[in-house]
Amino acid sequence: MSDVLARMQAVHEGRKAKKVPVPEYGFDLYFTPLTVADRSRIRKGVDPSDDDELTIKTLIHKACDKDGKPVFEDDGATRKILYQMDMNVLRRILEEAEDAPDEGSAKND
Figure (cartoon, rainbow, N blue to C red):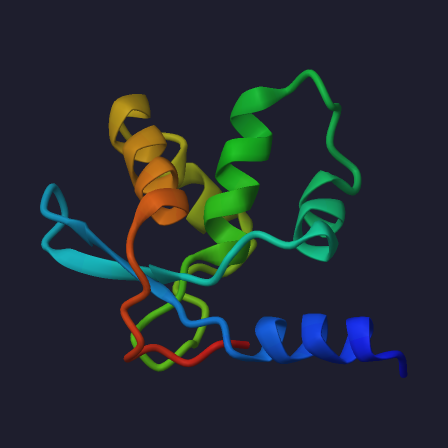
């Protein structure tokens, strides 16, 4: 592995999850940075123009608890509940996940 790739890998392995408080529901979610691989998995099988589905799939795929375990299962029951969320809350959660400082207490998967 080249020195450049080794340095990139070291940075990737050192990423920490970011804590996002969700007071509307009384819990915190944790997010690791969205990678190219994550984005590819999220987009798979989704019409690129379906922003709502991409947003829900991002939440399902990226939201974890403080131990780094996924919070949501990708199933019909979960989707039914998530599709009832206030869109402003959902957007805020994902925007804060991008901008929140590293928490450091959650595992990076």
